[in-house]
Image (cartoon, rainbow, N blue to C red):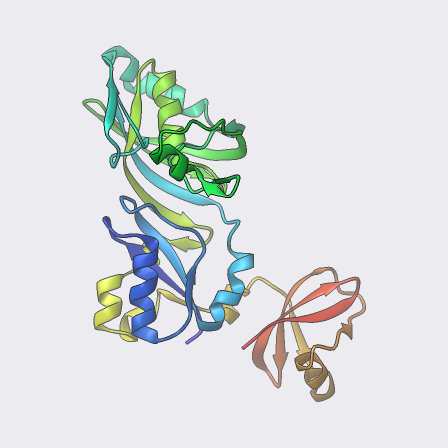
Length: 287
């Protein structure tokens, strides 16, 4: 079995924990396209077998999250796992629906964002959270991100629930703190659920327990073959001579073909992918 399984990660475990459990089920190489924090839930695409070779095409996907922001408190990690290090009052008038919606809309668009100290970004060979745990302050450079859209779901007491669609590299913990600041208070990310990663959606995800109990039957909507990963790419059908050359790594001349990734077929069967650059077809993924 080679491809992608969309798992609905539960709260309280790491992405690595899920990878390890799936490895035990299928006894194959397993990887993922981006971690979710232990407190976060939702879409976690896992690459199985030769599906791991597709990772370079999947790491830049946009994402959609459902978020609960708690106001009036700041934590050491900017989420619910950290210690509360500061508390302030919340002006109830500032968190009325119209004002909250107005503030949220301010974040739509391209912008610079400063990642949280408790993150896996490396500075001088060490991850930021390693410095943070030792109490060492590091100046963090802002990153370019984009918020495509943001929707208010509801307001309950001092908690704001919203949905956000954003680019790769967006830190929702930082976004929560920034939103709270615009509301003249403090805040932290209390809950996080990833709803979408590119075209992978939560409604197509499978629970890890279902996967462990029933390896095949529950996979119909949650498993994506390598062929289907590239179903929006053009097809190239090879004859037997070119097929042998292709498998041996020989670059094939392809006139009138643009630089892109292509689905490669031999005798109407999918054999993998190839990339064209300067009219030359190069082997990429062979199943």
